[in-house]
Image 1 (cartoon, one colour):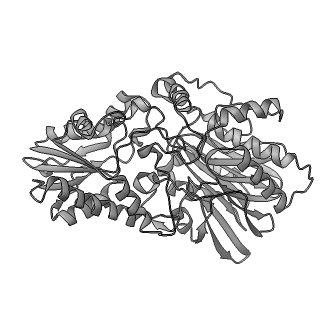
Image 2 (cartoon, rainbow, N blue to C red):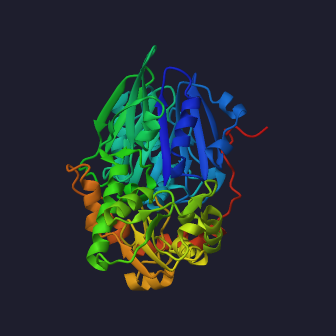
Image 3 (cartoon, rainbow, N blue to C red):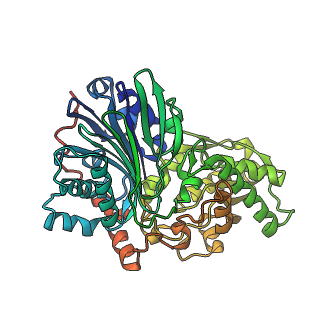
Length: 504
């Protein structure tokens, strides 16, 4: 999972790119990068760490230019090496830079083709570097000294034909303009906005609407699946559908967990969808546990479950209390490699308020249960401070299948729900009772915000992969290469981009 942003401005964009990345920091806390262009030269700074750690004043001063793109990352395909921090760069043709959110599902196959047929060298394990080189090859194959928007869209169409999986992309063609495009299934989010300045219209492309509105831009719309937009160096915007059979299947996990609640995605308010998740959960508790459910207090596990938990409590006429205080300087635990690291991090991240638990029957509400490490530790923490009974509610259905489209939960055996019943999961996490959202209820929660939508990517819940190219053999290979054990063995001794602005 990553956050991307691109700005075509009329004045220096370095600070705005930085500010946008801070608004997208929840989408990636492992690495960050910005590249700008001025007078045909690219200026790049990227490294491991949070945005505030990667960019200091000396770096920002060198990121000159009115066009630029930025990226924040969690490592998915590839390693967590700083060499794989984005944006990526290739010099031919024209000088291309690219930032990508998502995962290609056929990157290994394409990488071999790039070497054998396209004569291009791939230096990292990142599928984003593969995607960049595919785009570069298709653009170069046109043989144009001065490409126009038609050439750019033609290259994007070729990318759609070769690349499978999920990808929302921002890219720059040095001297020619800023490009954004979305995969034919629209799995990962991307939206654009505009703003009038004294020197003309400025444009921004980003993963979430909140990064656009926070900078004073007006949201225009989400990119359609398969669509590309191109803003040339003169500030003219062009858009075109570049896929043959596009169909919108946005990732439903965005509404559950990834996105900020103040964002809108594909015309759906994330906040409102989470409110409805709480309503549906309350109705299910009434159906399955009855009116005499015995719950004294509803306590959310901060932050993403707060909205659903509040509405759940209101609908059950039960007290809502903030029972956990969050240390905001700890990263998202489900994505950390290694169970021991995750366990330690949970205790560092959350501290219980004892008086809200002592001698009470507590319903803890979380957005989802992935590996189960977090909720098991939290349930024990609640018991340690005196809770009489601890029930647990998940605003999402059981996560039973690996995610292959840009979220790092690739191995079946690392998912607590895989192969286990609800009762077994309840025993494993140590709860007195466990309830999950029904999948259809979850879909309805999102669909209510945009009735025009017909389907979502719900593969982590139902195992139905919308790209149609995922089988058991693929999932087995993925688990071998990207499970916790494999991650710890990845080498970090990789040569980083020599053009990167380094520490002095």
